[in-house]
Every structure is written in structure tokens, then in C-alpha cells.
Length: 254
Image (cartoon, rainbow, N blue to C red):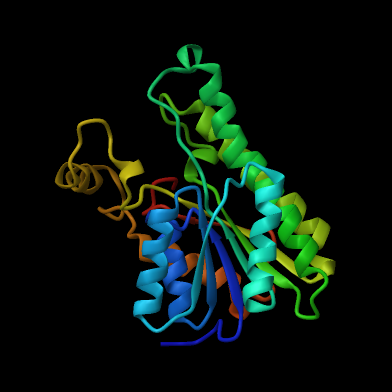
């Protein structure tokens, strides 16, 4: 086991389950002190228990990243508890689909933009403002999706638009702030072993069979594989990687 993040503080949003929890655990396993953020306290507390159970240090903070005050409070919490903010992973996101665009309720459109786009914008602002004051700067990884690439999926147009915006926002911010010592990159997962990748009425064995039949790799990604991509981009191993979008999708977009 390497310890690429020893002595560093990492903030992970959407850390109560799925990819966010896997990223938080992986960062802690490599030495980071982790602030686990999300809307619901109970799943965050469980993430902290898992980190502490493997000998790590963590803090759970309930927050809604679509609110500027909450995004700022997360940064303050990290600095107040651990003294710095060295890594941030903006993973919080929502999916409201299941209808063609013409039938999508307007509130579902706004909900996805509020968390998936405005939430990343507000998080980036707060994180960069802190990191650029630090001698060592910092690294930020935003979680997008293959839905935001050139592929399309039925009944997910609004979600796809929000994720395309995350990638574009990240690239622009990366160029704005690399001379401030802040590296910003993106990971775009494809289908991953989370509840979001299950179709209505589909079981996990059904999903595995569908993946064997449709994906070049023959399986979907494990959350630990997404976490590994995130940790690479956040680490000094990727010191010259700026504004990239690392796609982890079992070959689906080839």
C-alpha cells in the first residue's frame, strides 16, 4: 500500500454511499484525513466509522452543495479540524429521469442543474479560494459521467446536459487556476456497481448479464476502480495532468 496522501486533508462530497464512499475510503487508506460530506448525516457517519475502523481520521459534515453557504462551510470545517484543504472530490449528484424530455417535470430539470452544475461551481469557488492561499496549492477532481460525452441514452437528456456542463466547467476552471497551484481534472464513470446503474425492475445478476452482452469489457466498473482513477488524478503522480477527463466505462464509448 502506498501512502500518497499522508498528511493531507481531503474533502469528498456525496460520500455517504457508492463512488463517494469508495473514494473517501481509498483516500483514507492512503493516509488522507477525510471530510465526508453529503445531505444525510447517517450514511456519512457510517463512512466515518469505516474509515476509523481501518485506522484513519475522518469528519462527517452534512451539507447541500447547491447552497453557497454550505459549500463554504465544508471548506471551513476541513481547515478548522485538520488545518488545510489539499484535495477535493466533487462527487455529489442527482439523477431525475425515466421520462422523455418533453415529459420531464420542470422541477426535475432544476434539481439536477442545482446539484450537478451549480453545486460543482460553488464547491470549486470555495475550494480554489482556499487552495490558492496554500504554498502547496491543491488538487480537485470533479465526477462527471459518460452521459456527458458524445453518447446518448433515452430518458436522461437533462442529466446528460448537467454532466456535459460539469466537464466544460472543469476544463475552463483548470485553465483559470493552474497558475494558482490548483490542478482541476475530471473522472467520467460509465456504468458502475451502484444503484444508479440498475434499470427499473432489474436485479444485480440481470445487470451483470446485460454488461456481459453489451460492454466490450464484459462487465461494469467496481466503485474501487473509479476511486483508483480519482486518486491518480489527485496525487502527485499526475502533477502534469491538467483539465483532463479520465473515462472509466468498460469500453462503452469506444
